[in-house]
Image (cartoon, rainbow, N blue to C red):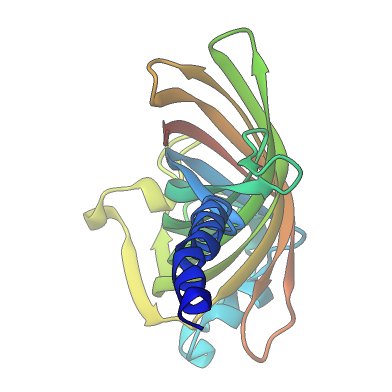
Length: 268
């Protein structure tokens, strides 16, 4: 009996050793996260929206109190500008997906999630007479904050040039909303009342409503690797979207785009 107990005591460490070994080996193959942060993207550029239609009726939709903005437009012709443009600042973080076949993260594609701050854009409709000595300009102006996501495919040209292309969407919310009516005159060919000095024109300011946006776009760009971590280049976008105001019909954006000077910090 004592001999059996002694043999069991001697064999116990041997039986436990493979168990520890297996546990240690398993820790080397713990499941990896599906996404890994791959880099940070920054950009400064110009963006624009071209609308399917722009008119006084559409401008009035922005106003909280359109009845206060009524003016005598008799004998004046309408000139609507369907394009708005401004400056934008972009920032995003890129995530590389896990390749389950190899257990490594892919560098040929990325999911980018980010934000954008857009300077005020001005939607404008102008009324003027034939002599250009009388004009009334209706303006809506607002800035925009956007959140966005895109999925892109990366490629390489030589050792230093990188390119990417993919698809993305954003959603926007406006700030600093305002309505302005500018009364003035054309002092020279090609001039516009809104560009005149303040003492040469009258400006009436009114409150404006909140505006929402959504856009689908194709992002693409070319960057040059300037160091092991940084690349610089051009980023472009083109697409379409919707401008939405509560209680009013949506306005279609037939063309939206951006031209951006971009920089990327690549993670190791």
